[in-house]
Amino acid sequence: MVSNVSDEKTFVMNMIYKVVIRLPETVARRLRDLGVDVEAKLIDVLIHELNMDPTDEVRARAELAEKYLEEGEKLVDKDTVQACEKLYKVAEEAIKALAVAEKLEEANKAKERGRWTLSLLDAAARKLSEKINERIYDDWDHAYFLHVEGFHEARLKPEQVRARLKYVKELLGILKERAHMEAKQQA
Image 1 (cartoon, rainbow, N blue to C red):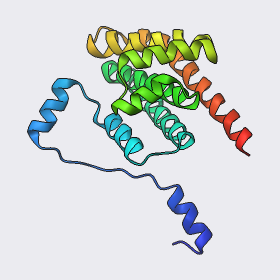
Image 2: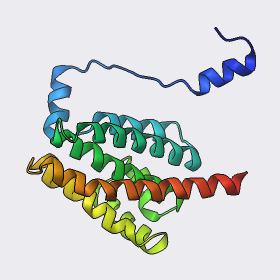
Image 3: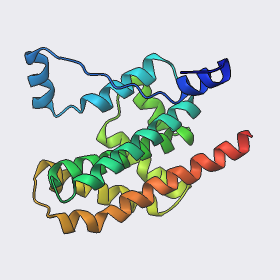
């Protein structure tokens, strides 16, 4: 039970929404055939439709990347295919967040199109590597390897996934450091 208005605000601000949506079979089949990540697509649509402030978008994407990392790490020995996709999603969200934070042209193009493409993500990763930290593009490349060889081709063993996990974590660390610096500047 909430005792006062201040506690109520804290409770509401810390609330995480979990939504279960039942899709018509034809829509679900089409999404599966196209390889659409419904969760990521929904997040992108909501960020766009809510016209979120860039700082809030960066925070939301960083939170999503952390969630994907936690899920991916748990799956490495149980389901390497899904682990690879989750770990790739960490990198994808990190690149999107950093591109928004740095006001890259690719972030604007993605906003105009209503979605990110692989070419936009790759171009953003290259620019971020030049602008923030040279490791970014290499980290992105390792994550993309997980996506292609681990998720799409299902060829990776758990030890191969674990060997690339450090690159995904490094990329997330760069995002967190950037977000921390931005928060200090705003304070």
